Length: 77
Image (cartoon, rainbow, N blue to C red):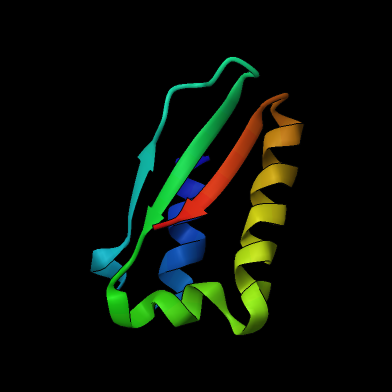
């Protein structure tokens, strides 16, 4: 899952070396939170107009997690 998020983010940004993902331990509901960090000037590329790209990233991650019987959440920091 972490590799999928990194691959998606690196395809969107100008500085792929600045992409970093931190993973939290599952909470009481079993949801794993992925924190996506990108360069400050690439933040707009990852969020998109009205958050559409960020929403699409979250949808793809949730779909991939469902196949593995997991629950995930993506936060863009």
